[in-house]
Length: 289
Image (tube, rainbow, N blue to C red):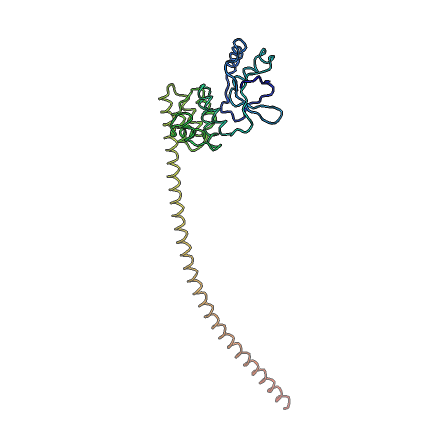
């Protein structure tokens, strides 16, 4: 049953799929309602908190009321009130379908809404049945949700098509996607825009190919240098082994020479002692005479 609800007791739903509202059209709608009355009641649910109700459908009509002086002075809006225990997924689907039927969703809003629906656990099949579109079509829109906001805004403004937006998915980084968007916006026709994006993609692919080729060449140079170093180390090792062997032989040979010299020294020392003793005996005999 439709009731009169105070405007101040209603709050917007933060999950509302529609995010864009034309200010001029809201003013026109407010003037129309003030003149001929509200045709369709809004749909709200009871909530706890400072506000007593939350919007399910009819945010545009509610905003139009809040922006019109005479309607604000009246202070109420026609609304159908549902209970508090509503399934969040059902509410979101109801909002989606209501906006879709009124053609109030922009392309960007619809893409964002699909993603939010999937995040809430609504299947692609449920969305397909609700909107009467193929699952494949919804999936293509979902794929666009990863594109930068600037691309989505260009879609909403009609500057680019979904086909062109989809072509930007071929780029690996956000910077490349935005550069691709810039190339598209420079074109004078949709066909030329697609051609510009494709040319830019091939440029990047060519640069990446050069980088990969250069990387392979660098790797081969590094491997070649490594092989040369291994060979040099092997040669150094061989030389070290050779030198160690000859040094060892030299030390042994030198040791034998030292032993001979020591033997000669001992013999000379013994001879010196013998001479010294002989001299002592000679002096002793001389003194006796």
